[in-house]
Length: 241
Ligand SMILES: Cc1cc2nc3c(=O)[nH]c(=O)nc-3n(C[C@H](O)[C@H](O)[C@H](O)COP(=O)(O)O)c2cc1C
Image 1 (cartoon, rainbow, N blue to C red):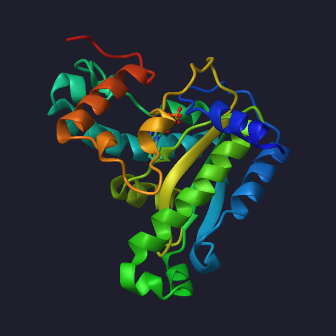
Image 2: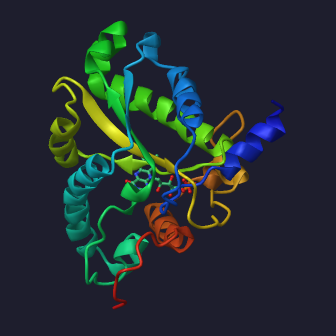
């Protein structure tokens, strides 16, 4: 693959937040997870294990677990000034949005084994937070890119401690393992707009950090406000203030 092809794939991948229920080929799922297996990891510890879920009842239970964290997030978002809120909480919700990704035909649970942190002595210095989320982010990124290469949509669904404790028994995940994210996979139910990223010239420095590009606290807050205009409103059920 040439670099331009790779760049095109990177830009093509977008977070998809509504899926068609149409099934996807098992071969795609296998290749996507095969790609994830080849992610880099500290000292090659490979903490990842994947649980593939197709059963609708199980997906609904996972959706309920994540909904518990959504309710907490909603309460916190509502305490922020309106323009700093994520778009789905810009108005006062009539109904807190439930997890719509459960409509996707396949959901992958990204599990991590914290014991693999022992692969590197650095984990003893920086502890599990170093080895687990960073390693898992690598396999997740490859999985999302591989999904895009298959013409599928995917979404990073954060699994907080709140949701994790509820959903682990649903699929019988051993207590020692962590679940850091869910990845719904399916054909997108809408056409994505091009993504938004900061300009390359604003984030790259040569030889020394260029202080003319340094941002103040206000600049960063303004940037976060401006981001809100670029995000797709995920859930339509809310009332404008
Ligand atoms: C650590 C992390 C957590 C994320 N959590 C969520 C999430 O819980 N729900 C969601 O819809 N998107 C989530 N995302 C996706 C980001 O919102 C998305 O990547 C970002 O807005 C850029 O949009 P793009 O993926 O379409 O390029 C997460 C992404 C990352 C890397």
